[in-house]
Structures are given as C-alpha cells and as structure tokens.
Length: 235
Ligand code: G3P
Ligand code: MG
Image (cartoon, rainbow, N blue to C red):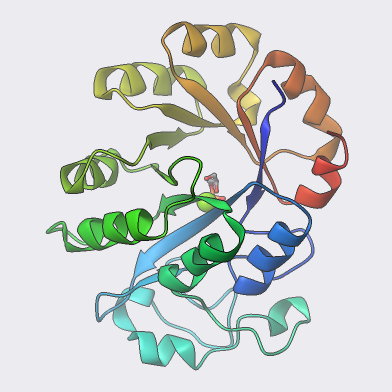
C-alpha cells in the first residue's frame, strides 16, 4: 500500500498556506487529503490559520481570539507570498471543497475554548461535509482538545500529534486513538511496526520530497508535505 499524500496547509510549498487557493491547488494536483490548522475567533467562529496571531500570514495584526470573523475577513492572506485577492477561510468554507471534490481533511486543532462549544461545532461541520468514502480526521498536540471532540461524537477518527513518536504510542493506546501523527525525525521501522501491531496508523510530518521513498518503504500510512504535487509524482 502506498502512503496517502496529505497537503500540509494545502499546496503550501507554492501557494499561501491555509487558504482556499492552496486547498484548491492541492485538489487540482490530485491530493487525496489536506491538513489545515484551526483557531476560534472572538465571536466563536472556527477559522483556518496556523499561528495564534494573524501577523505572519496576513496584512493585519492581533490575536485571533481578540478579533471577530468580520475583522479577519478584511485581511489579505496572500500578499506575503505574492498572491492577490486571497482571504482567510472559515473551516466551513474549506470543507465545502469536499462537497465538490471529495477531498479529505485532517483538521489540526490549535486552540479551542473551554466549554466544548467549538468542539461540537467542529464535529457537526465534519459530519455535514463528510467525504463519501470515509471520514475526515481531527488531530491535535492537545490531548484535551481530542477528548472534547470525542465528547461531541465518535464518528471522527482522532490523531495524537507530537514530535517524539515513542511518547505518542502509549497515549494513543490508552485513549484508543486511531492515528499517531509524529514528526518524521523520530519515526523508524521499529516504531511503525509497533504502532501497526497495536492497530494504530502512522502519519509523519512535514516531509521533503527526497525522503518520500524511505518512509514509503517503512510502511507509514500517510505523509504530510508542503510539496504535494511533487510527491504525488513519485507515486
Ligand atoms: O499536523 C502536522 C503539522 O501541521 C503539525 O505542526 O506546526 O505545522 O501545525 P504544524
Ligand atoms: Mg498543522
């Protein structure tokens, strides 16, 4: 089995990360899966961005948690990478791409509030825009965020994220998570075999094209890369 190629923040090697443009380009080059990052705005909307502050990737500045969706929608999210007319998408807008293309998403929760409202909203969106051939997945470095999603419902596979693969295995086993999403540098053949023996799948991030074959040979289940087009060409 060849690993699933997942477009990290969309086709972010070329296009501005975590935007509809980057997601549409990932779909256009045949990526079956897209990773994106989500935060919650001041007024409770789930938006797609990596950093907690809008400064690095938009024309504005400020913490997402201190800005409303309307304020964030006014920002330019493409100029920093040389593209015009690009805005910050909501998660709902990104998921609409599944309705037309059937692309799968790995939604990485960066930060949720507290009371489970955002987790319930996220869960409903993922069910409402589910691909026809299997569910979207939710990942996080934050164990509690994954448990909050599970409280909302059990149909979305959960993925524990981290840098040290061996530390993730007991967490995944204890919590019956379906995936480990590990930094590639701590993943080797013994780890992949141990995870598979426990019935847990392995995703690695963020992998350069030159390292594709090594990890494909190890039997990892999914590879997350900024260069989806170039990596898909190797399959
Ligand atoms: O989900 C894999 C990867 O995106 C985790 O790290 O910082 O790129 O969100 P980061
Ligand atoms: Mg991420």
